[in-house]
Image (tube, rainbow, N blue to C red; front, side, top):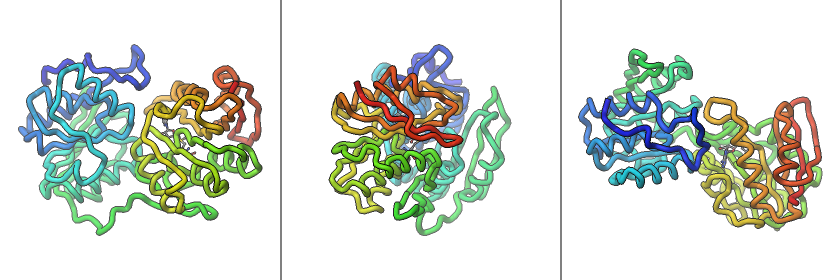
Length: 370
Ligand SMILES: C[S@@+](CC[C@H](N)C(=O)[O-])C[C@H]1O[C@@H](n2cnc3c(N)ncnc32)[C@H](O)[C@@H]1O
């Protein structure tokens, strides 16, 4: 294994805790694979490098010109801060696009959670990387499925899973296959006049999530109708932002998410509904670039998974963000799985909170910023 100070890497501004590391065994195997292959840094692209461990270890090993794509705004920030602390430069950050992959002969991938995201990445590599490109995808064995091999097999003629080591496994995909003229993503679907567009990594795809529907019903019944400035916090494909903007032509709506796949999807959704002039989409962590007390209404369907482990800290961060962004007297409408019982926490962090709707599965609350 290369001699790189992995333990010095940090996750901030993402949640930090003693049992949460900023690297894993898969990162180490991917780095070792690239170094063994003797690839030139300018021909390496890294995708899904959570806090920069892969990119920084390669850069530290003397490879220059490595390209990296990270989905989360938090991961991008952590990579920048980790690079500064270690005094490492010479890599470049990209969206999941042609600039990331053109001329790349070795693509290192931390396997994403969803098959749709993997499908979009595999297509992008086959579409834009060099004709002899090799994609090396790695993950924790307990999260890996045979379906991942099948998805890779749609874009590569050879898919070879390697022997598992230290609970991680690499899959080597080579011989990219011809791609369709147009990428399959973003996919689109219409729901009663609302068009949703979704990249592979976006929550719920182009479907309208059941919880989102319940919050939309509450809005349709008149909640939050008088707001001038509305924030869809953790906007995903932009379903809440676009619906609100369609129903309230005077409102200024901001949709914000920490995932680049969500942001790209929300931008497509906004354009597909002709709302470009009234909805602004921002890639940001917990709305950190929005001024204090600047919103009349925040719409929130918070996540309850952090990575693959259940972790309510992610929702708490968004409740705190909503409290900061709302003006005193402003409203927060939150939908959540009823089993999570967020009401007391919302009352504590935001202000007086009442239940507005309850279905067998979901609860919608209205909190007034104190
Ligand atoms: C349950 S989905 C809801 C998406 C969308 N609002 C809807 O109702 O369909 C939660 C969203 O919150 C985003 N998210 C999670 N933590 C975040 C954070 N710290 N800052 C911004 N967005 C975040 C996720 O990326 C995801 O898109």
